[in-house]
Length: 109
Length: 115
Image (cartoon, rainbow over all chains, first blue to last red; front, side):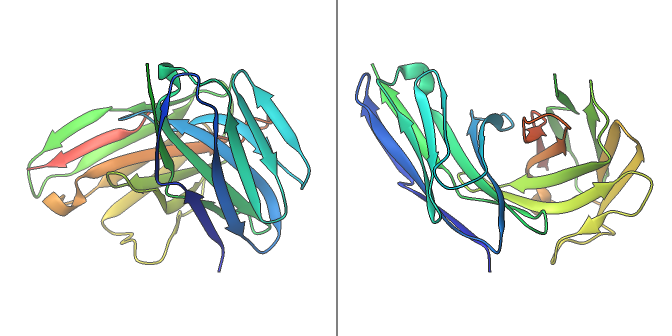
């Protein structure tokens, strides 16, 4: 069965303290791995799509990487406005999308 | 581009009444839209896949007679929660797949409270 596990469940950082969020997955044929940001009471906002192992994408302070078993979302010198829940989702060959439970990131000034 | 508009953002209804939630793709056509439910501090759980011009496909355990989905056009899908009960209170989110590389675009969600 396809599974997506995100860790840690919650992460508290000081402003400027870089860290990484993990998304481990098992899926029968990966079509794509997605990262989203979700603010409280809002729908998820698209960040990245990764399609194959070794791929990396960057956007401002965020960088996403992908291996055959996991993806990392690296946050460099985070700011308080980066506080949100970060969701990882995988799309299998049958087009099914499965979401992880998310990592709640809090960045304190 | 690739904007999905969802309305209403919040709704409070009495037990036994029905509530309709709309999901519109504003600048693209979406032959397929997805409806999710999210409980506090939990992940999105797919409820159903809405296909334009045909019946929706429901996930196991989701009552299709309770959660009516209509996808009558390429830009609009609706979810109607019928005979709502307090346990239906949740955050409902729709999404659609655009033809760009932006993955799945999500609506802003609807907070349903049944009293």
